[in-house]
Image 1 (spheres, rainbow, N blue to C red):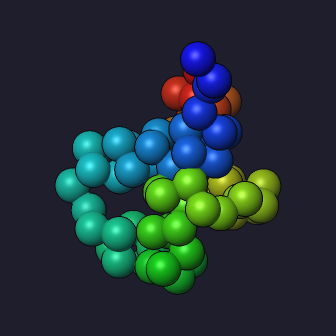
Image 2 (image 1 turned 60 degrees about the vertical axis):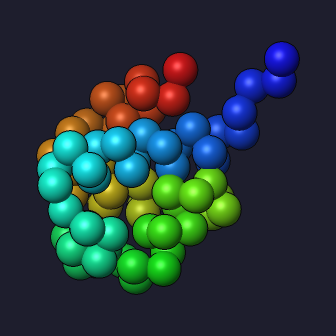
Length: 73
């Protein structure tokens, strides 16, 4: 069986963490300084996210980059 695309796995990890924080996509986008539609695209695995934005996401989730990427395994 083929492994899910890294963008899909990353999006699922972000959505899971965001939901654990109990915030909407719009609230989360504000926390990250990013657009809500961009966050939605990330969570659906449609975006190939730049490293600077991955760092913004990790900071908003209050986790390290390495912790966020460990969830992709």
